[in-house]
Image (cartoon, rainbow, N blue to C red; front, side):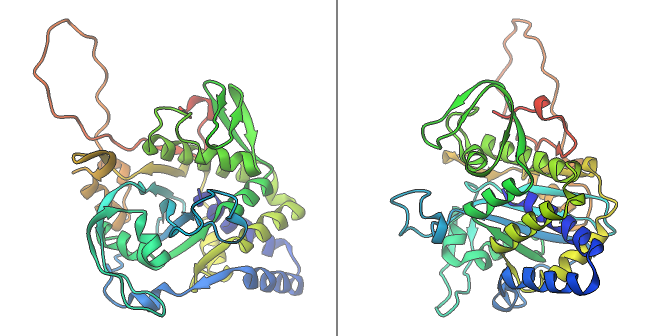
Amino acid sequence: MTVQRVLAVVSVVCATLAVSGSLGAYGYYYDLQSSIHHEDPDAMLGKDRPKKLNKSVNLLLIGSDSRAKGNARYGRGHANEAPKADTVILVHLAAGGGRGYGVSLPRDLMVPIPSCPVKNGPPTPPLALAMFNSAFGRGGATCTIRTVEKFTGVHVDHFVEVDFTGFKGLTEAVGGVPVCLPKAVHDRRSGLNLPKGRSVVKGETALEFIRARYSLGDGTDTQRMKRQQQFMASFAHQAMTSGMLASPSRLNKLLTSGARSMTTDRALSLSEMLRLAQGMRGMTEGSLKFTTLPSSPWIRNRNRVAMTPAAAPFLAAVREDRDPMATLKPRPPKRRSTGTRRPPQAQQAPQGDEIRASDDICRKTWG
């Protein structure tokens, strides 16, 4: 839900400053920087963190379901509940640029939740096992970062949080995002109504699309995550190919929308985004991938998920700045039944499907 915003902002900040006059660019830069809300998780997390092994950059992107301010209309009856991380994606930018990927971390993933520091309060007690998305409600982005670092061993360099309202503005800024459905959808829960085939969604409809769950596919959060990844890839394709980078008015709309809806760590300033953008100049649509942390239904509750053995080498590759997809075994080809019954075998852990920004949208399974 949020990775597309960061990738687009990183690109357009570089382009905007490059085409602006020096004084004008500085004033524009200052206005944008002032619009971004910052937190300081590094100061709260201290030194008990995974060691940074190389010059790659890991950004934790958080789409929260907070109903504060302009988001109160989403989820009546939930206003007094602690916000949760509706979507969390670990974006890895390889050292040297030219390659990057986003790894979706399932919100229903069962993991240990460590004790987390809380501003103006005592630390939260640890939980032996709980749903991953509950960490955000216990201690915001800081607790989400600590939880991710504990169960992945990956050092998180930066975080970006965006809410429902901010997401809508970003889809409008790029002129809408192309999607493709195998059948018409009319979802009462989310309000989504789309015809079969290609559509371009933005604003409220885009939000309904990424939030819809029960009317698309098998109704699982796992398939919704995959659909969100496909949406991100389509967003990135739209940002890179629609001529937005050559349009000052469209650039301004995207940048201001992103800045006003964004919360980041203090170190992720616009100047740091510009530095990252300069290192990503060699990145193409084909080198931008999206996948999911290897997981399968939890043995105690099939509505939750747990990491599979494949997650260990996958995460080691992330830490060591290697391609994690190379650690996964390819899916075996389907065989025709011969009529001979075989003894039951243990279910193979599902492997993460790779999605690229350059993929044809109607060749994907959107649900």
